Length: 411
Image 1 (spheres, rainbow, N blue to C red):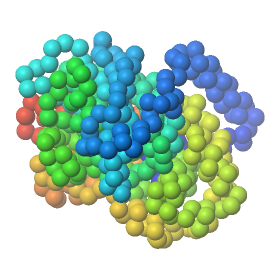
Image 2 (image 1 turned 45 degrees about the vertical axis):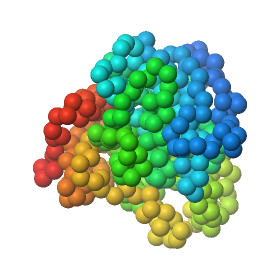
Image 3 (image 1 turned 90 degrees about the vertical axis):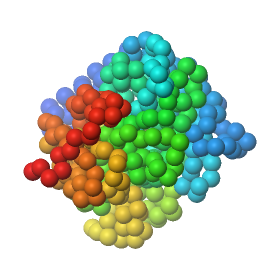
């Protein structure tokens, strides 16, 4: 599967093959743990009452606020709030979704502030892995300082089932897209936001998929808002191809395990039909582990080592039902005409391979879209960081009404 979080989950490192390498990795993990303890603030409202909404609170229009509370640590003197808002579940019933809203200082411009929705990469698949609960949530929002400096409100959803009760519909595009759009609606209601109706969406990896689905849903789901552009770094597009590409990598096994665990609970897809019994304990443990930083990647690698030898009992999972249909259902189509697209892709990305992202560009171009394609050095984990400045500039031009550039037709 796809979509690592803060850093690449690379090909198998064969931890423990040598004593020297194992000792070095253990020292690195210990040093990282000490740094995290020393630098991190105390946990916020970890799975507290804030994230739990009664049925009577959930009932209401999508995007309306249920509650909010201040947060500390936002850059450049911005105000920040943890929010709980209403959205629409996969069964089309009201649900609660959490997230973060960041409001820049200073007076709003005429017509209200612009809004940028940040769609985060994989952080986990259980409630305690919500980015709004993370120690370094503001550092995880790539380009946040630049966005605040330009006077934009930033709305960062957790997605359903992260923060709020699960299960999290992992890599389920409609679920992500609705949560992103409703975070924009909710941000407009936070006191002091003074936001208008124009917004852009910016996401990485899983969040890139969420950004694309936002573009696909925007016109039908939120007619009162105007989406000016979609920016995505190494997005998950062709899920079937990406699952095949990642099948023999440590990261691919790790993330496929997360998808299978989630889809069993969301769709009723029977995991025991395709996962070896010896692998089940590791899959269940991986489902409980979050991805916030390098130490998490290291620990998940240790948990998932058994998947090298025992994981899937089939060799053609993407061709078997119901997974074949589910992969197809959650593969985004080309964006509609009139929704410009910015794509950033690392040339050395081994999680989302460059040809897959280029193929999505071609499909969108053939649909009459305008696509700016930015190739950047490096791999998957830092794709958003390394393209954030260009993405923010591109979004600023869309807010300003400048014609969208296009690399369609270029080699």
